[in-house]
Length: 224
Length: 224
Image (cartoon, rainbow over all chains, first blue to last red; front, top):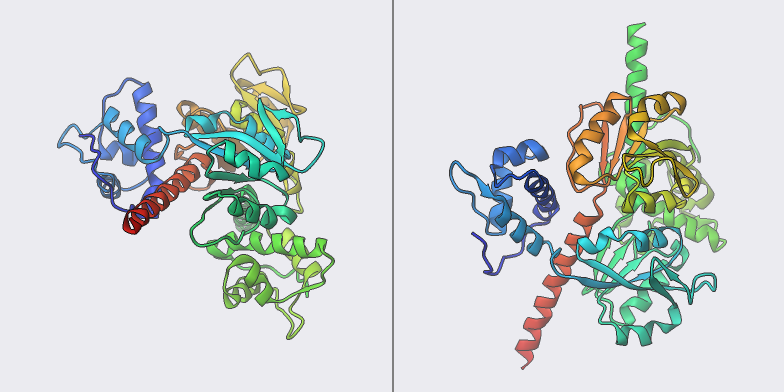
């Protein structure tokens, strides 16, 4: 049963798991399935079934005995709750390597994020467009933010400009910053910051992989 | 004092914070500074100074009274420990929107990841190259993995192919998977998986932003 009653604050670990359930539902729908049990969701996500039931009850979804959850309903509620059905306009700051890559990733729009303009300071890119998205000079931010109704800024500048650009974003009314720089930026309390450092994730992966190789090296020694 | 003695397993929360210290050090070095205190690191990262000292002692870095940490030494130890000084070769699977974006992000190489080839099944991309990187048919994986010495796979296929492609990667000897799909993939225990779902991060940001707007809406009501 879809519900529009207000959902209380959902704990962050639950929020992190919801997109996984959504992905499984999308997959099963593609395959023509109509219902999914928490056991099946558990198998597909490696999360225990009781946790799944608890997570879904946070967004007011309750399964039915024997049949489980209705996939269409799950999709509707999760997409809506996760903000993927509404388009959120955003500005991107820093049209360098990673920034241009994100401008080229039209997949973001499917998940509710539309980058409507980019800002940079380099004459190499200012005045041009990347993947059809105009790149303006950072000094034009004030004028542009009045024209577009934008609350989200994607931060992909080099680390030596990150704090300065974040400060400008806040001054001109950006409320949420998606920070791709490996720097922690300092912002007022009422500003949302989502850190997504690809490099931090890379180092975690390298570290685990090295640990694995050391381990298998030791095993080989033991076998000799 | 730089040290090459073996470092014991470092806890994951520490591992997640180390790239932040590295970024601050890079920034300060650019500005010509030689030493950094844990107080300064604390100010720049919003992490308490005692935690920073603890984290750095995990990688055998100890500060000196009054002067703090030597920046060159910190850079050297952190870059080495985080795996950024060594080039790790990788294959990318799925040269679609996000995949192509990552192939275009030459910044990854600076952080130790070199994507040497991509795989896809679509005749639209197979046989071509993206940002100078060749795209092969997924069926050629066996032959190519023997030619290149690759242990890391970057997974950027659509969700309905994610598990199948992950299975292939494991069969042919990939040891670590950087999973950009919003799906949890199932792999044997000895395989490293690093999940980086941009969409999960997006939904966290949307959710916090919406919470903020509701709150300010309520405040406005209160003010009326």
